[in-house]
Image (tube, rainbow, N blue to C red):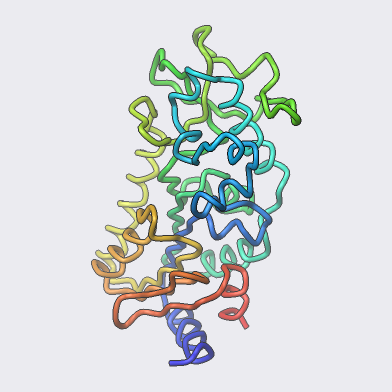
Length: 276
């Protein structure tokens, strides 16, 4: 099928579905103006200071940096926290919410993004899985206890030229140690996962109910690459188990298993074409 036929097939499948799963990677936020850190060069374009030092995303998004250079660690995460707070989600989020809330069996979101933009766009918090955690929640770096708290009142101020966080940096609410985002980082054995585990449990219960009621599901996957395949594999597993249809929207990696639909375009363009 050509692209127009694929779009029509996607619209038909979506219209006939009883339930919608939205699965999303970093590519979804590109249309909002957020960086997706695709490959080392993409990360370095977003953060030239790390290119000068030869530091990869994996080296910076690492709990070791909070021990070895906490002002650099909080410059990176503080910049992202401020960026995500200031950036509005693009129109595609709102269209997906309209589609999802109209489904008789509802919707769920499964995302590797830590930016909180689904909640910001109005999606119900109890219908979202953030499989890598969220930058809008903090924990102790030690950690001193199994405690995660909302970071709405926390601020991080940067020295832009030096790309260093100013003192004071976020501290644990229960001890004097440094705080960190409740995000699963590379080589991370200290991430507190109970918030995300509760999200996974609600998601599993929803899928069980869909299977029990024989509801027809469509999965719209947006901007999820194969480098870290958690989102893509979840999309494929859901449609394999429940017998649904996968619509994969990705400008570079839109390949799908037989019988499913791949659209080679950006997230917002794909949503708009299907809606039209």
